[in-house]
Length: 481
Ligand SMILES: [Zn+2]
Image 1 (cartoon, rainbow, N blue to C red):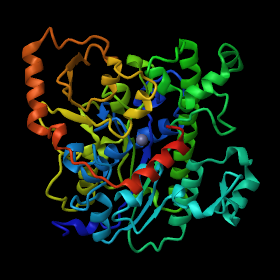
Image 2 (tube, rainbow, N blue to C red; image 1 turned 180 degrees about the vertical axis):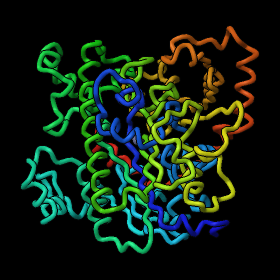
Image 3 (cartoon, rainbow, N blue to C red; image 1 turned 90 degrees about the vertical axis):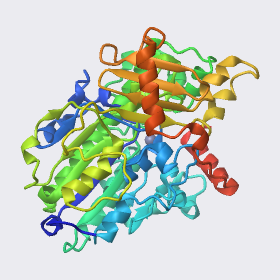
Image 4 (cartoon, rainbow, N blue to C red; image 1 turned 60 degrees about the vertical axis):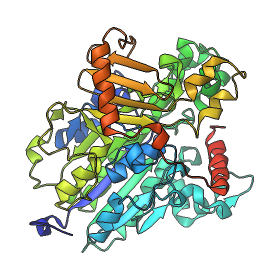
């Protein structure tokens, strides 16, 4: 499989960090007013920052499948179907075949081994997947009673403990025990910024949400909005004030600050272990989050930029052909489908035949467009259960969506035949639908969708009742249901 002069790349490691539900415009290194990412600001001079990077979907499973395969959702089929099919080669599989140690730390259950997302990983740590270890009533697992955890707990209070910290510890333990003759590929999903947002680890709690802000709102309502009441809000059953959204976003921003510390600590760990220079580090998100824009919350039911615009920061290994780009910002449109091709390109590994993406460091295509796709079937009932039968509002949450984005315009096509178009160059908040005013352009953009993607009717469904019940139970644990 290796081609050309790939041998001299063989010592390069890859660390892929996915910040679940982190939208680009809430990072201070992307211009946000709150200083949420002091650690990334230190990394950026050594990295390439892609200012216009976009997800391929609104939520976790299709976006991760795109990351792992370089394909859009209707091509990798994790759209209506939540299973990553074995016919599609993944990044971990290719690197494992190339002799890499491969280790994954899954965040949510949606990207579990049962769903095909562990394929190619020597080991795939799934915190949620150890139900036999759950201690009833305590809400903690036997793992958390292990010597490793207690060593940690001696240094920090239990209140600070959280899944992202566990993920960091697992990676550090894995890498510190790794034989160094072969390179590694480590993937981690850090899910702290995913709802519920309000349980912020102690050193970071209160950084952006002041006692005055909390005093100005019904804090119980704020907490329920941070957890799951956003579904009632979307159904028109729960009015939310600007002040309440401010508090919820403050908690979310504190979680981003916490994740920024986790990332910084991982970078310091790579340096201490001598891995840093030889490691390609990719920091991105699977999708963003909605805080009342277009009447929406969390990350479902739309393909607006609050969900699609994601951070993407790439630290190249020392000696890379593109190291001259360190410290620069790249403004051209890039997508999650470009991540896998980039890893193959930097490592000098022959990519699988079928990929929609292209290396972030290849010669940019002229007039490039990026795409996104969303199927609501796994999530629609979370909102429609609050909507009366026959209310036409329900239709808004039942539509599959496809979007194409050029540097200037975005066109969103819904499966009910309706469409929206936005001048995202002028109006990044997408407030004014201009589809009716520009029918010729709308027709052209729709043709691009039809040319590049499969229609929702061809998104394969996978039926597995027992597993669907497990998924529902986990969604309930996460506070979705
Ligand atoms: Zn996600």
